[in-house]
Length: 215
Image (cartoon, rainbow, N blue to C red; front, side, top):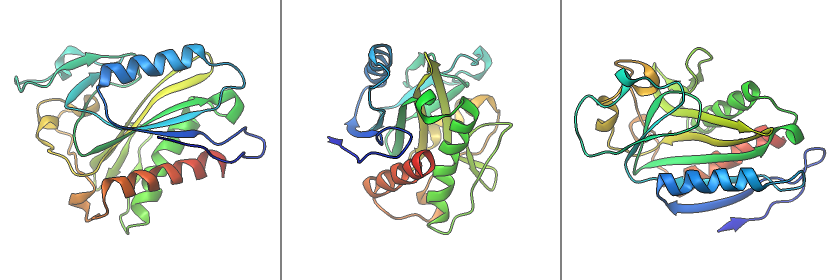
């Protein structure tokens, strides 16, 4: 369901937020490419909030040695986003950022910082200290990764986005080198003490991201 938003001074209207529920990764990726390829200067930005069935996605920097070391039935999709390999699955909030960076006055690095900052802000509101890391993009709590990032820029517009672990089976991460780092610890919001429902956390994450993009 789309949620219209009021205009933000100087940066065009706030993004339309679409809640896609549980959706196939490949189909969602194709829809992002279609949307981005067909947009014009006045096309409103959108944020897509989605949860995927189990899937590994391999970014353009991914290498064979980071692929799953055991057969666990989880498919691998080679995609066009930046970064390396990660896992998406039930209990994870994914926010895809279909944004006109020129209109927002952003380049990719500040966008990455905004995405990380939205997760940091959300966790801080629940008393959890989290940080971004410029050397390995994502959000970490005591060296355990709780959110991953990957973006594609096409014609000055972004797609793909961030994934925030909420209440997951983390075992599939152990079969890969998450984001290309062997032995990287991974955690989720429940293990950090957050008890709010996923929908509540998703809405809060979007709100924090809006504040950073248009505040």
